[in-house]
Structures are given as structure tokens and as C-alpha cells.
Length: 266
Image 1 (spheres, rainbow, N blue to C red):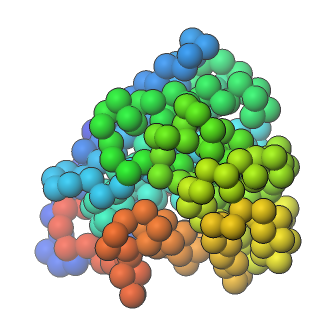
Image 2 (image 1 turned 120 degrees about the vertical axis):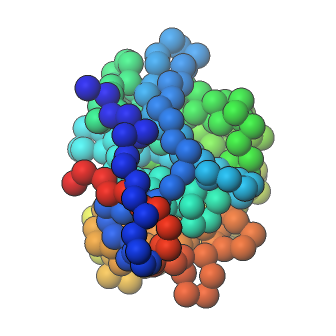
């Protein structure tokens, strides 16, 4: 059965609630379908603030589906649970071609990052069609390859503000793509775990030296998958600082919520 985000059951606690991994804050959430130019239907979810302006929009590109990556990879799931309420940020998550999650399975098959170009273009086109403002690509691992390969050229480049990269391996993305980002001049924030399995901070700083505007941030203690609430929260704070004028604040995003909450299944 396809997961329906409307199935979250919210209650009003008598006091402020600590925000934990499974805490879901209020938002307007809907299942969406995104059609690519080569005819595949990608399944996803859009979460936007319940009220007020949308301060920015994240178009998330998930880790490698052949190694367990999908739209519910934990940092993106937590972004959709929290950021609409805490920062007014809209979060679009979707499964790239051939990828499955509780939301469902996207059409097509995994194409090693080549056919996925159509997925990136379709997701950006969908967000623009919904008039979601200040659109940013957010890639994680394999998703960073997609952002780097296809984000700095048309038809995507003119439709996004920039990109945030989590744990970039720089396997498929080459110096050619980095030079395209340099030429585009769009912001590129690069979060690199100290203990990454593929590319660690010193090497990342050297590789991204081709992009003058790239902001490479090494994160002490973190690993490629950003396991642990401490590291997931750090990523969300960095994202909000980059994409919104207000930012996450000197203490980071709130760790408690005084309002309706729901709890996601583990």
C-alpha cells in the first residue's frame, strides 16, 4: 500500500515536545507524481508550510538506489518532518527512476546517473510549475553527482538558486562539471564528513578549488551517511543557513516544539 502523508495523526501535548528522529511537525503534505520527458512517472512527496510564506524550496536528490538510497533517506525525511514548520522551507522528495520506497516505485530503471538527467529536469520543472520559490538542489552522495552534472546547465540552471552537496564522492561528476558550476557562478555549499568513505575534507577542498564560489565545510566526527541526530541536525542547520535570509539562528533550529506533533513509524 502506498504511504499517505495525510495519515499522520497529530495531537496537542500539554507542554513543549523535544524534537526527535521520528517527530513530525505540522505541514501541508501531499503525494505527488512527476513525469519525465522520456515518459517515466516518478513518485514523491511535497511538504510545504501550513501557513505563511515559503522562504525557500529544497529539491532533494537521494543517495545511490542500488545501495539503499531513496526519498526516505533519513536526512531528507527529517527535513520534510521539520523544515516547513521550523523555517518555512518547502521540501520536495522523490524516488529517481526505478527506485522504491514506502511511497511507491518510480517508473523506469536505474541508469547510472545518465537517464537520471531527465529526473532532475522533471523535478525542477515540477517545482517551478507549482511556483515554489527560491529553488535549491540538495544532493546527497549519488544525488550530489546528479546536482553537479545537471544543475549548472540548462534547462536547470536558470530555474535554481544553487546547490547544497552532502558527502560528494566525485565519482561520476568530473572537473568538466565543476568548471560548469564555476562558469555559472551559482552558490555551491559542500558539506564533507571528516570520516567520509569516499572524499574527505582536505581532498574535497582541493577538488572544489575549481569552483571559486564553492564553500567547502568539513564536519568533524561525521561519516558519509550522517548517522546520529547530532549530525542530521547539523546538516539541517547548514541548509537553512544557506537557503533562507533568517537562517537557523545562532543556536541552530529549535530542538523543542510547542504545538501539535505526530510520530512517524520507525
